[in-house]
Length: 328
Image 1 (cartoon, rainbow, N blue to C red):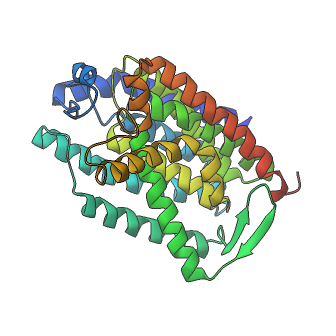
Image 2: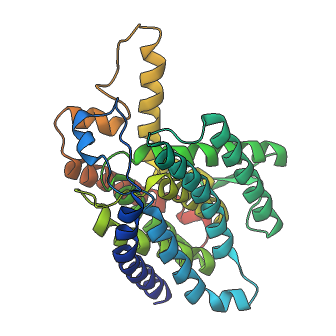
């Protein structure tokens, strides 16, 4: 019941806020600049408002504060810690979006600037989770139901790598209308179900709010998109996924539920690695992978349903893979 109400609040707030926020972005002329080296037909999207991620960020915050108030009064702040972590990444994305809009181009912060900010946020988050007792250096291995105890410093390096890589992978996935939104909804459902069954109320509240906010955002973000989430939204989502996985102490499950994030990123890396030594030859028609399928004739709607469906299947597989984590 509680997660259903949380979902509902986030959905309603995000939906209503969107009716105000999108016209506001139009007045600000906060339009997206489309990459010139992307699919040519994407140029028709030039000027579509960006920074729409603020819509579901606001919806999630209001939902977790209202429903999580009782937990906060009892001294449990897990949902706020996860939100704060995701919001830091959202803030990095916001600065990136703002610079892009101000310069009227598709490049904002430099890669080193983004990397250092993201790395600092990842390290701080892992330290906070350990201090609050959410995290141990006993790395849980899904499907095998075993733990691998590793040195804390090594764990910190591992965690920072996973977090920064995942956040940027979600950002790469956000390349066609509704894709990052649709792919992340099953991930949110997975964490909401697992956290609820395990009795992790704070995490289940946040996951339910995340899912509700994204379902509402999809009303505006599905093709043809009326608004883009921007780096503000995609980096927030990456932080949210990592926040939930680490707060539940099952970080390796990101590989399974985030299969689309992973494949999209690998396709981009493979394209670059192969392109240079072969003097211009390509593995894919265009990278990342969603553009490859677009160039092959797939519509944005088909990409949305196929990639989201794959994530749903892998999220179900992930649920089976972590069943041994706690006795239900």
